Amino acid sequence: TNKLRHIKSGLKLVIELMTSVPHTVHTANIININLLQRLWGIYVEEHMCIPVKLLVLRTIDKVLDYEEGMRALLQSQIHKEIASLMAAGSQERTRTKFALKSILNKVSLCELVQEMLQHVQILADNNTASTSNNNHDDNTKRTQATTCYNNDNQVIIARVAVCVKELERTFQNLDTLMSHPSRYLPCRHKFNLNTDIFHHPQRGYFSVLSWAGGGGGGAAAVGGVLDILTSVLLSLWEEGDMSLESETEEHSSTLSSLTVNTTTKYNLLSNVYSLLQCWTRVQEGLIFLAASRESASNLLSALVSLLQSTDDKAVNCGEGGKRNPRNNSNSCHQLRQLQHVVYKLYTLLYVDKLRAEQAGKESRRDLETEPVLTAIQGLYGITFTSVGKQAVVEVLTMGDNLECLLRL
Image (cartoon, rainbow, N blue to C red; front, top):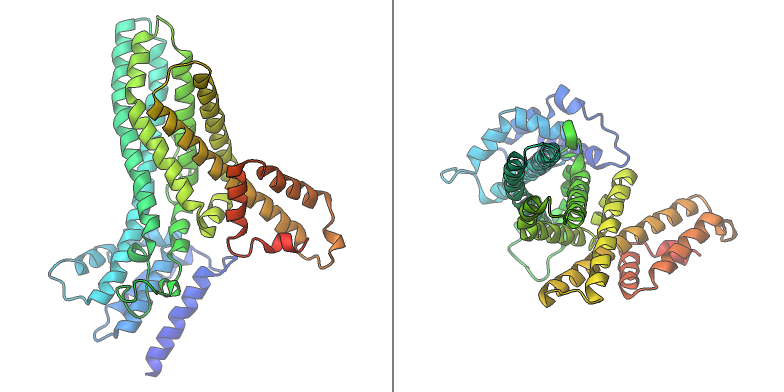
């Protein structure tokens, strides 16, 4: 009994160290001390009780929040052993199979983001090669090469759209796909279930997305899912502008091949909008989007550019241009989605600025500074539109965000 208590206490200590902020763990030690191998050795110990096994799997899940932990798992035999335990003929208990499946789903999430990075890099390389071929003297070869690249791009964009949709589906079902309930499966009390038993799988989800897909060189050297999404948005916006500006008779054949992929690009754009909206509905998603100033700034710039482009097209079409009513409705819906996401991100940035200015200040008079006034004016300016007012209300009612305003 004492040994089990010591093991459980040690595992809980490792979990606290892995989830502490700021991080107190030197992540290189995950590989140096063979942490995953030691944890897995406890799991496969003969006659090990289920509560300890569940705690071991939850500890492994926390280790996988780090890039070094995920790399150590994929380079070891543990990944294959977990997959074998999930086989149909395995004698593993259903309770532990649920936790094992959550670990495999986290590995699949990492591989999904890496696949998106590869597709975006190929897309950027194809666009670069297509641009260089447009300068070729032979119009026939130029047209054939452009058509070939656009066909490849259509397949790649369609696959990226599927990956983005899978990211959204995973986030919407985190409690059943990537959680580690302590005692029992979430099959009872479906309509009155305490969400604390899932141990906040959103943290692991966004931790993986923060580093997965990093590295890589070449024309599309991006890192993290935020930069990947930004690259996709910018490429679609620039390509849309290029197709509008290339309406000359000399490039008519090239333009026709570029416009073939309109439906595929629209599906990808819609999936990106839907994913961002899904993230911004929760506090963890907003914090993730604004965690990196550079990535958040690039994402905001891409969203604002698309917002202005969509707004200009809607205005031009409303002044007498012919437009399908269904497409007009889709554009208006996309416009509101973009506005809502952008306003929410700006609201969170202003709230963070207020929190930073209020840190360490007790007196109300000490808060009467120029940065505080600028942040308050920015929040007030967002409420001038109905979409902005809704975004401000939703962000301020998340968690304790309203406290920074009540102090004023």
